[in-house]
View (cartoon, protein in one colour):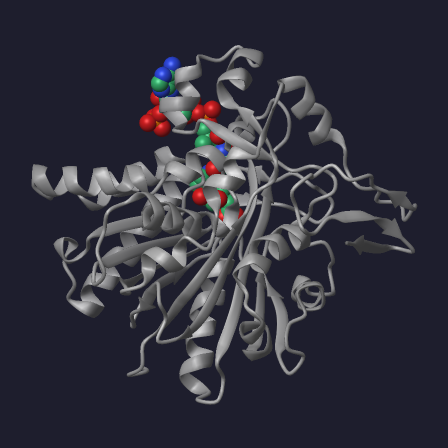
Length: 389
Ligand code: HMG
């Protein structure tokens, strides 16, 4: 265990410029809007246009937070995604070129459903703890959640990327060790190579999420002797906010009313952005962190408990302590502007965008600009290579 503080120094975020109001989706699918708003706990979802993919979203999330010094000092680039664009080449390499990052760096991609970014974050911690000369690690979580039109999972779609600069003496969140983790091969959610939409055993997946939470929280308490009331906030992987709420209720079942109310109030501020963006898979827990940092009223020194879950499945419970500059550093991700710039789609427009997919037969395609505010766009495919601008 490192005696130095290591953790998140900056957080960036990007989500596409288009969204669907879930009240409109409910009407189109002949469902009571309260099922989506209350039963699922989601208000809107981001819709990915053809000129964005996980590489451009990752670059758009990272570019605004990285100063020239950061770009030259990063020596590990971890790209976490379950929506990768290539079976072989890592998204981290595109990112390195697009952002002009240091080439004396390890760059690779990792996947374990929504757990990938947490694996990356813990790997970043270990890398900095083990290499005194290493300065900075970039961990980027980028995904698009697609279940398909008129499926049960449709209401839990979304798209976005969270970028985290991990350093010593971090200004947002110092990570604590040890952590508690558990993995087991189960079929709750998966996406075979031939499908661009995920398969989910919906109810079973929610039960497994809660089972893994119980296991790692119990293990975490045993390992660290931490109590629930030591935490100022509990954060969860948020595939949809109702499931995070169930996780919170499970963890606080034996707490007094005042403690329950305190955690619930914090949970609500920590899921404001998730309600508007939807599931961004591996970035969802960190979008919730961003929501808490920007919308909550916690103080430096507050201890946060974080539950990460990736289907398949891996769960991890870990903790971090808010640092004295967390407010100004987290404001680097201009989430309010990104959300305010978004254009609302009708259900018909959303369905049209959803059906627009890239060719899978090797043909050439030129994509006219769709995103108006994004710094990085996918401009086409030529010679089996994605073209970025
Ligand atoms: P469903 O069958 O549409 O939903 O699927 P339901 O019928 O179970 O209803 C959902 C809730 O709405 C219920 O509440 C209803 O009572 C309530 P609950 O019993 O859960 O408390 N409800 C209403 N509430 C108010 N007013 C009404 C009303 N009607 C009903 N009128 C499901 C829902 C989430 C299963 C589906 O959307 C799905 O399959 N989603 C995808 C899978 C998923 O997100 N799983 C989450 C756990 S796995 C995970 O987190 C990993 C993941 O992020 C992937 C990764 O790791 O990469 C997914």
